[in-house]
Image 1 (cartoon, helix red, strand yellow):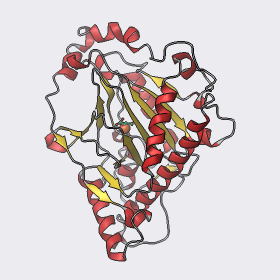
Image 2 (cartoon, protein in one colour):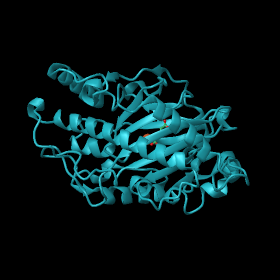
Image 3 (tube, helix red, strand yellow):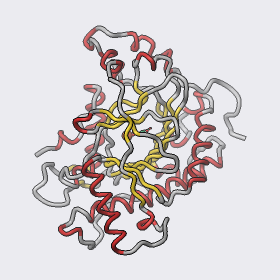
Length: 354
Ligand SMILES: O=C(O)CCC(=O)C(=O)O
Ligand SMILES: [Fe+2]
């Protein structure tokens, strides 16, 4: 029995808190709402689908030639799309189903319980406290959980013991997958793609990464296009592994084609390159902007695993000269938070150009 069973309403007060903001179309942000609404209907795309069984052992150990072809497909997708999907990824479908169920139970806890300091390391977030215009507002709630917190015995799971076990297992399995893919992507950057001494992902381990449990409530103003589920952004990590449910809503920026919607494929996981890998690869791999659109009727869930190094890890480059100066992950995150607070928008890598 969860410690917070019974009691108040579960929904975060998005509608009440952002009522005025959603109706504001004037002021210094004229047309902001129209800017979200005016987005034309987008085409649905199928991301490159890569069977990674030969790397994860999910399809039996592949031959050397199979592994090389798989690695080449991964590197190509990271260059051309910044996004791809994987199957035979080694994260059991039953585990992902269990995660979805546990996530639904977690988000059904009363709002006060979710927002309490202790739950999941105090990692609950909702809406966008810094938003000054509709286009800066994310109509969603999330637990952005540092893995260091979930692995410790002191972590409060609100009495949801299955959630604890499932979260740890998902984090472990996604971490293994992310590590495998990151090493493959790094090897492809070496002259001739030669395997060698492991140098990546340096400084990333089970305690430095994050798991983000996302929920997108139905949005009553969705038909007006007045709010995003998650505002356009790039991820501030090396690599993200994402499991989305069947509802859909994720869109990514596909060069000149503009925004394209990612079709949910049952059982597949989505992988995307983050800012740190774009820096490490000297811009060869692309950290691509993505966003989540709201819908008026159906809640949506997703889980994202962020492959991150420790705060004091220097993010260098695979080869010199690099377009970026060396910075630490801590410095990068601080700058992102500062920019969002000051301007409502993340600037990201351009801050670190030499
Ligand atoms: O929910 C999704 O599909 C995307 C989530 C995402 O981009 C994030 O958490 O950074
Ligand atoms: Fe993201």
